[in-house]
Length: 256
Image 1 (cartoon, rainbow, N blue to C red):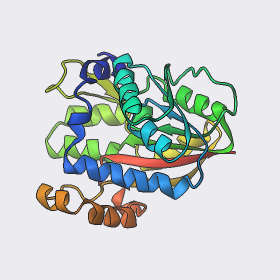
Image 2: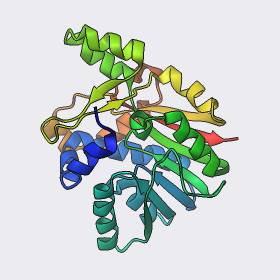
Image 3: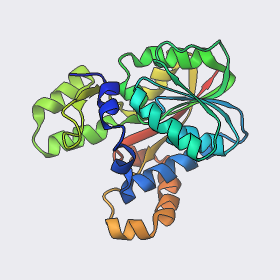
């Protein structure tokens, strides 16, 4: 089983095209609204696991001073090209999120989107580094894979060995075989694990939400009304009843 950055290096040229479906457009609109709930003023932002730069570009367009890091060099090449085309000044750095090359208390915001804390070899190290580089009162905004979604899929399809592995080991192999033979390990989270996960590194949980809880949608209806669907998703995303329905969870932690 390879590391996640190797998988993403191989699919870098196709990555953005893999997320053109209406579901993913809705996903990103919902995450944007959740970010906007917490980020009210422009500041200095660090985008961990930036990939092809979606969130780095988003923050730069909002007036933030953005530094973005990733271990997948090919993804960084795509991100840099997109920033140049958009005429946005973003500092892209090839770096491991577990050992960041920045001074203490350098950033107002740290983003760990794209489920970085699920894919990292040592998510506690990533949290510790995020805490270290955040200013006091700074925010960590992140998404992770949701254990409930995997457990539902495994049990409903009779994959009891995988369900047992998820519960006993807390991790499972993933990867899209249609684009790469390389797979990697993800560490999904149950919603009730996240607060203690953050607290262990000096971050207080201030928000947690589901992302796209009312899936599956009719694709044609969704494509014609993504904004309206996002309104409803945002309205109920913090209801605990929705936490077991979504494939991903969003959370915000604040440095004490």
